[in-house]
Length: 337
Ligand code: XMP
Image (tube, rainbow, N blue to C red; front, side):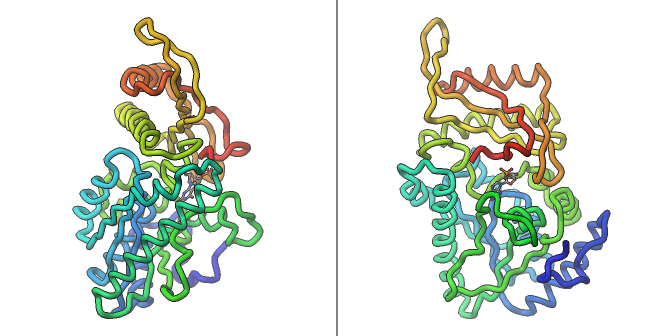
């Protein structure tokens, strides 16, 4: 259902023509933003990258992108955003290193919704401080905030008529009133596959356009239990192996997403080289989906599963068991928290 905030002229007819969507959005963004300045929070994910790229296409250096390194990203992700995004778009990017602050705020917290709220709050505070700095440096108001909201986000956040909130989705919409931005949301009417088509049209690299969806709160909601640096490092190592093996097997486009979840408060007995271990389990959650509103199981071959399990248990000493989640959505959501 079209949102009242989206002018009818930019609601695409389906199937979409990516070049037409880009042309229409560029025109709509120029009309909205004029000669004003805009900022965009990059998350490392497809949606914010494509939004930023399209806005950059429209207004060039009037846009500044901000990437907050929360310490909850996957292995080498911050470096990748810096390299891939800037190379592809030439957009101005500011990176804020805030790992320590997120870890302190999350210390001792285990409840999923509390974690999400803390991560959202910290993100907004860091982003807010950075935005104020940019406003001060620019010497002129920064009136617009670009967001990578896509259609399923609107439905799942309960903004759309008739849909209740399923989980509190984290974005930068909760900024304080004295830092009032007007929102620019060029992907608001698009589904994920359409966002990818638009990203390809904009010339973003495959590694960015076909990156699997990654939640705003990052690995903070994939470490079940308290989030600590040590636990995040264990999960990052296991997750990197899974992503490497999925890519090597050519599964990146077929499997919509394969979260790896660390059951950090559980221990089970194992044996390695004749020695007893008492390690943590990780869960593989391969899913297939079109828009993440529903999902099926992304079945992986025995060979691929065997390789993933043997590599994780050999290369990540803290993990001695790998389990497979084969529950569709519904009833289970894709993420565990
Ligand atoms: P669930 O777990 O609700 O996830 O089935 C659906 C899709 O949304 C992603 N996800 C999020 N994305 N902020 C985001 O930007 C969030 O807070 C968030 N929570 C879940 C999830 O990875 C999946 O692709």
